[in-house]
Image (cartoon, rainbow, N blue to C red):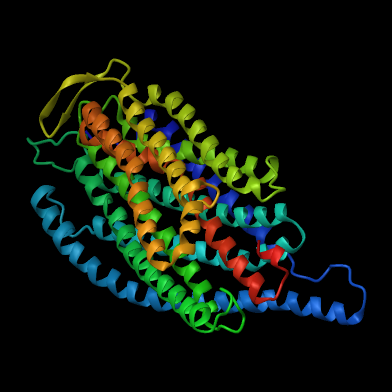
Length: 513
């Protein structure tokens, strides 16, 4: 007997859809807030010549921002042409290897392109996420510069709002597409929880989830182009601009006389924004699909009486959206950045609050998702020697969540100018390039110790608690605060671009600072 969706699954589906829609709406609101900033010269001036000079600088913001936008669009369109060819060719390969051969062998259902479709959708979604991020970044960079002329608080708010567009937009879009794919495929495929060997029906949930995993494969494939291709362009443009400008011509980093600075700023958008958006979408889709496959293969946990378990990874991400929404409201409207010293704390506060809220929500929702009497965990007939309860997956997810937060704090310590390692490295630079390179390598090696220890603890404990499913849930936990994490990531390149535009437009040094 097959069923599409049971009544126990509806609350989870409603939570997932409502959070996704809320994330998209919030991203649209922030996009309108950024786009609504009008660039005009409203500073008080004393004479006509001063007014003309100030207007020229204001016009330069728009002109430079437009050139950066045109460069970013040109690069992405050229890159997307290559991606389109790859998608078409690889989709054909996936169809014959997975959908045709795999379907005939395992499910007696031929010609249905389930994996092919999810691969194409994942690839297109990855491209879309990167493109949305790039569009809002080039829209926000010169507006951030403009706001920095008058107010640090408004400049910070502009850059952070733009980051929220990318963070909430990516997570909301990717989550709503994935849950829709699952519902449509379940309706069409009519999977069984356990295969009916007597009727030769092997169309089960674990097979279906493996087909849906093409969604993650498509995202990762495009991330390879976006992150690596865009990243190489970024570094090539950055180094080229520095060599010809700072080294050969002794110019400032973003001197308007160096045309390569435009390419440098374009690189920040196509590599650190568009590439990062595609990359993190791939990570999100892969981790979620891995957890879905492992849950569907454990019929002691996922069975006819507890089919809502299959939605657990998506519910965690939904909880993350709600938590990050509250966090971003605090960051935009409550905690005001009125001094430069407050910026770093404001960003760390975002990560801290979102982590705490997700942790609370995670432990609140987990008991209702699993069998309260526990289960004997099995994978492909192999029974693990202990009984599992609802708090085991909660612990696994929590470990990933907390480890991700601590890794973020560790990364901040080793890369921020506010802390000892970077300041000491700056001091070492006075001794020459050789000392700079050697000390920089040493700090880089040292910075990996804390992340490796935290990841090792998470993997070992999670394998002990729930085997490989525990590792997958740990990855879900790390990505549960992705809305805020991606917003902070995007904030960096947007601010970097804003600083470069300030120098190119000939604005006061305080504006760049």
